[in-house]
Every structure is written in C-alpha cells, then in structure tokens.
Length: 379
Length: 229
Image (cartoon, rainbow over all chains, first blue to last red; front, side, top):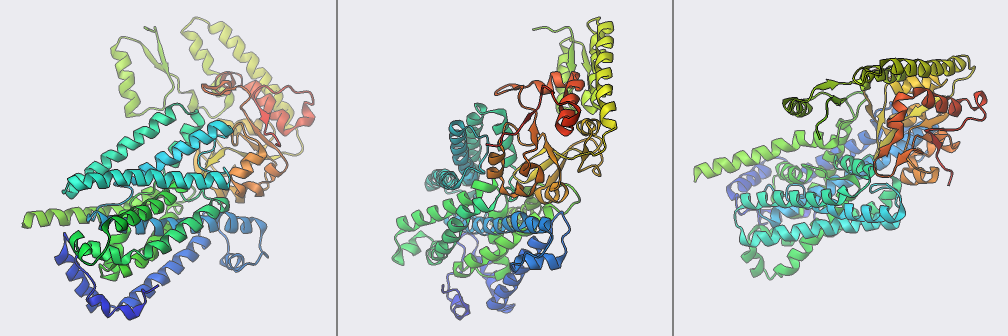
C-alpha cells in the first residue's frame, strides 16, 4: 500500500492529463494544490465514511434507541431481542452490502472511464450490468428447474451463490470484451457509448427470451430483482460476496500505475515498457468481477459507476489513480449507503434505491454532456 | 373471435384506455367490472349479479349470492363470539420488500371475519404498501399465524431463503398457510377464480385455520399448511 501522504509531493510529476480533456484536469489539479492538502481531503472522506456507516446501522424504518444500537455494534446482547434481530440480521448486512457495492461500482466505473478514455463509461451504461444479469438468469433458471425451488438468486446455499457470482462476472466480461472490440474500430466516444447501450438492450432481450419459458413466480421475481436493492442480501450471501469483492478491491489498487500510464495514451504506456495486452486483460478482469459481484445479489444498480469517479476527482482535485482508486472506495461506499438510507426515509413505504441514485447521478451525467457540447462549440 | 360483450376489470390508465377504445372501435360493447375496488369479500362476490344481467340469469345469480352470503354470515357469526383472537401476518416479501395490505383491504376483512387480529391494523387504505423487513419483524415477530406468505414452500426452504425470518413466531410454530393447492404450475390459481365468487369457502378455510376448535373436521378447499420438511 503506497498511497500515503509521502507521495503527495510526487503527485506534481504524476501524469495528470486526461487525454481528451487536459485543460480541465490541469485546472482542477491547480485548484487541488491551492486548496486543502490531500491527506486532509482523505481524512474528511474517511470521516464521512464512518459517519454514514454508523447512520446506516442507526437509521431505519423502526426506531431503535441509539444506546441499543451501540450495544449491539460493540458485541453486546443486552437489548430487546427484536431490536437485536433488526440490527444484527437486517441492518448490518444491508450496510455492509451497500458499502461493498458502492466501492466495487465506483472502482469499476473509474477503471472503465480510463480504459475507454470516456468520462461517461460505466458498467450500467455500457451494458456490463446487463451481461451480469444474463449470467445470473442462466444460473437461476437452470438450477431452479432442477431443484424445483423458485427462488431468484437467494437462499441457494454457498455453492450456488458462488456459481451466481462467477456467472455474473463472466456475463459482464463477455459484454465488456464485445464493447472493447467495437472500440478498436470506432474512435468516437459517443458512438461507442450508444453501441454499449444497444448491446445492453440486446443482452436484456436474451434474458426476456429465457424468462418467457419460466414460471410466473420466477418472472415476477426477476422483475423485482431488476429494480436493484441491497435489502435482500443476508449473512449467508455475504460469506461469498465479502471475500470476492474485498480481494478484488485490494487487487485493483495495484492497477493504479498502469491506469496512470493509460491516461497518457497507449503509446506512452508502451514506451514505459508496459505490456498493453496483459494490462488490458487485468483491467477487464477487475472491472468485470467487481461489476458482476455487485450485480449478482443486488440487481443492476445505476448511476454509481458513472458518478463516483467524477465526484472523487472533484473532491480530491487530482487525476492520479494512486489517489483516485482508494478515493473511489471511500466516496463510493459512503454514497451508496447514503442513497439507501434516503430511499427508506419517506414514511412507511420504501423507494427503489435506483430512483435515489438517479437523483444525484443524472445531474453528474448532464454536467459532463454540457461540458462536451461546450468543447465541441469552442473548436 | 367476435365477442358480443367485452368485460374488463383492469386498473384504469392511459394504456388500457387506448386498448379499450380500440375494442369499442371494432363495434364490440365494453363494460367495466371494477370489483377489485370493493373492500369486503362479499362485495366482490356480489358482482355476479351484475354479470348475470348480460346473460339473463338475474334470478339464479340473486339466489346463489343469497346462499353464499348466508353461509358467509353464519361463519362470521360464530367467530364473532370467540374469546381469543390470534394475531395474523398477511402477505409476502421479495428481497426485503414486503407487500403488505392495509386494514381496509378485502383480504384483511376475511381475517377479521375469521376471528383473527391483523398485526398491521393501523395501516389504512386499500392498495398494498411496500414495507421493509425490519418494519415487518418489529410488528409481526409475535404473530401467531402467517397467511398468504411465500407460495408452495416449506418452512426450511423459507428460512434458507431468508434466515432473518427465524424471529417470526409463526414460522417457529409452523403456523404458515398459503392458498396454493388449487394452483396450476403454469397458468394460475383457482383461488383467484372460484375464490372470488365463493367467499364463504375461503372464510370457512380461514376460520378453520385460526380457530380449529370451531370446526374440527374441516376439509380445506383453498388453503394448505407449509410443510415442515
């Protein structure tokens, strides 16, 4: 782990130019140097992370006294058994899931934006999540047909849970590879994005065809799974989800240098002595596993992958991946959980979390689009 | 196919309106049957009188309805006198989102008439509400019965799919019932066909579930207990 503050002085030499948008990144970097130092910014992000995590455990539709919440978190059991169940079996898995999914989608979004050199790339937009959905649908429809259990991606036991994860990651990887292949021939970012959206539709239609043969219960369950939610994940699912996502997040931190080199262009990366093929393969694997693992149990979660990297760049004022990757972990997890806390605030009824994600995610996309338009006008 | 009459009971909305307009354009008379808006089971069943007008069977319909209503009231009269009213959770979840019917829904009227006490009786309205797992555990952990929960399931299966539900007393006691014996694996469930016009049969089942002492030899028509294995 070499992302500590001793590197802040080096960040001046660090490759800081986004290829398509270097004026902007540079100006943000100068701002960054003028404002708060990087360690302070990281401390603020970490403080927000801790505060949101505590809020996730303390807030919910049922009112539980803060004292009881603290007792349960610190391992005590001397509280009302109903409160104990709610905090331990409902809120803790929900909180851990939201934190993991936020971090995973934030990181994979950042990796994709650099890989495609496109600020609008993310697993959701480019159809990677749809690929993961197809993987999940294939596993669930085949296992439920043989086991006779009409349960969509839950309660199948550790083996099948792992199988769903693998299928989701493979589905994600296949779509990602198709989009990358298309990217070789198409150099327009806009066209590539639209192509990704279309591939997403194409893959979704595959799921629909599969489902048309399924029982009405499975169809209803799939439809609800598609809304996206952290609330269905139990401790049992987490036994598979936590090790995979945490290992992948740690492994992806090692990709910071290749990502920085890619930011300066493929030629530059090659002159730095990097094997582009190996690097790309690693990046695709990392992105697909992170996005796939996040989608497998929670359904497609929108806007986090696109918004988190931009928000992190804004907060940290840098384009250096050695800072952005850990930054995305903090902002991503905080933001995902915050949106979920908000989703259950309005009174008795819960909102789909994707609706809340769109509220802060869509404006980020709009700002990027307007910036593109202005640039196009200027040239 | 050229029907003489088209009866619809869809929820009104722009999409449905345009489809219905299309049918009208074809010269087929269209009438509405919004029986789902009724808040009592008998109110829903009484729509057979309306249907009978189109086939000149008004007399038979009136007579049948009176018989059904009489049987229904007879059962409800017996449960009105019960000393203890077991508490009931009604509805099911998917991935932590529970679809819970408010107190004024016809399904809850069934529970009241069967001598039960609904755990969400303070939730008012007709249309289902979406609640999260913690709200349901808080309100229903002590409920004696769980009715119309996960379909065609066994108790170990339910707990395996969602271990959080182990805190529900009804699951612990095995008091979980669903209306699936007359469900076809592919096409539907007779509970939603015959059940609508024979509320007396549904009520008799529910009464036998909540108050077995009132009818020891009851033959269940629509309901079955979730299996223990």
